[in-house]
Length: 268
Image 1: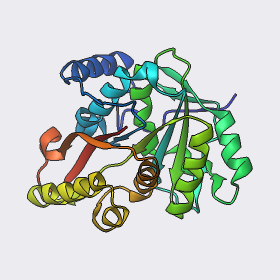
Image 2: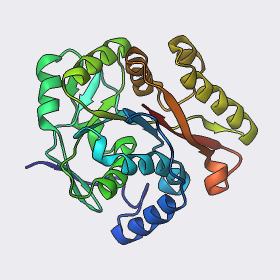
Image 3: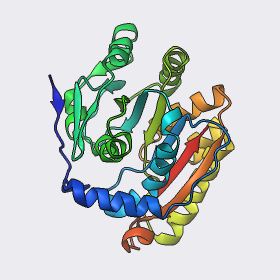
């Protein structure tokens, strides 16, 4: 049985499960319940180090916790590659994903489906998976919420892709194989505080507009490919979108010269 080991613990998040449990409880207890009129279909979460972004990410995961009994039994993570260049989308062929709270199970049936039926667009790339923080920082949140429930995870890592084709494939699979999507994405990188606020407002407004051309032209994110794929699926299925929380690294970690933006959003 092949398990993916933690590779960015103690850099992006603590490997101490008791410390994480306390932090998660503290953040979740301070978030007011969000009213969503329909079942959630997807979430957007930041992927920076927890000291910077977990106050924002907690809003998405608080909603997931609240809706846990209603969500599909597979969660698909759409993540950008930060370190490895490759074509198309990398599927992670692990049985388990390790976290400080024990392991998450991978949906092997779904990855066999994608690789077997769409080999031109989905590929194996362990280098893209082993050190990728955009995926790994989501896992402790997921395991803390899921606990022992029978929910499986499938991480997909994006690099050089035809976003239109990928979203068409994922949407077709979604019709037959219910899943919840989580896009891992930060917003602007290293603007001044005032410029960061303007840039991020423009990005969030574009996403909420549901206009694909506007999203392509205006969203400053890390990286827009997975988010664009999700937005196309959302538009095709007439999903609504809601901003849950926005902050930046000045708000969370008091560094004002080179600000990074973070947003949590829900699709339903």
